[in-house]
Length: 368
Ligand SMILES: Cc1ncc(COP(=O)(O)O)c(C=O)c1O
Image (cartoon, rainbow, N blue to C red):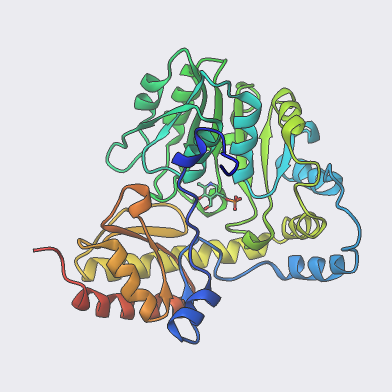
């Protein structure tokens, strides 16, 4: 008999990533494929980050600084938080894994919203603990429901703000109410991967609550507005006690030298973030108005993507778009078989998506 994994492992469905452009070009014999599937920044990285990577390339024979001294210093200055409150991660999704390893005993459970970012469920499954998925309320995280789902065995509760793949947010007063109510022994993972994109006035900055809530862990990433998804670099900010425990389970060189250098440089380029947010805001208007014209329902979100109800099989719609060289994400794996998630692109990419989707809606009929 071959070696067997731990007994919970076979029930895990491995994370299905968005199809890479190269794979679609190969499989479908296409050129100039566009990818609007993984909520990446269509403007790419800041030129400052690109220069930093070029310079860092000459040092690739050297291990990274396992403690990420300079990047942590830069983050500390930017957010006005102590260096001891920062843990660097190989993409912010690594933080949910580290929290799970550091904090979950087999009898514990995790609580999060249904249809929420898949990493939370994967972390629970990896540890073989129970998890509870709380239904959304009108496509928004139901913080009261989350609180009701927390019991004596709950160790981690996750809130993606804003959420992915839904794209909606928890408002300031809802978050403040929730943070006060969650018992101190429960770690609150507040995932702010799309923080920079959100312009709503009642959107809360999780960092403001760290002082009063030593059980809070805020995560941020360089993968979205900073345009560095390929490098895998993100971070968590929390009470030094939590950071200390995460460092105990963190792989020693989890962030690369190239990633640390690029992230540090990217932090200096506020103008790139401003342009990225503006491109996104304009793109959202264009896409939403096109979806309305096509008679498609969508969720009015605050992120760099739009969740669209195609009123037909999302998988078939995705396939038809792929044949036209446009990669989007079907949402069946998130329990939303009619929905697709479309990342907001550059103006030309948005126009191409709209034209292709119009064609697709004629080709793929709703079920009769
Ligand atoms: C809500 C949310 N959190 C975390 C992540 C992971 O980001 P990273 O690339 O930093 O691991 C994503 C990426 O899609 C996300 O949507």
